[in-house]
Amino acid sequence: MLDGQPDPQQMVTQACMDTRELLAPVLESAEGVKADMVGRGWSAENAEAVAVSYVQGMLGKVFDAM
Image (cartoon, rainbow, N blue to C red; front, side, top):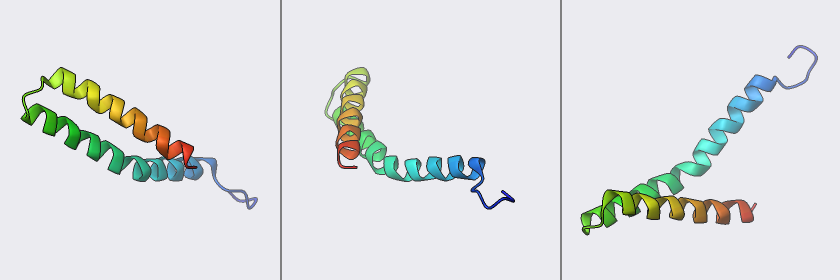
């Protein structure tokens, strides 16, 4: 912005990029958990449910550490 204040749109964009960077390893890991479970004979629905729980638990740990 011209008055020396940060541009709100740029701040939101940066926050989204930072969040994506933070979440990417958790989401990739959850996909690995799901793929492993399906490969071991679990149904896709059950593997997805476990992966969702995994993501929720990992996000809890990430935000608790902040």
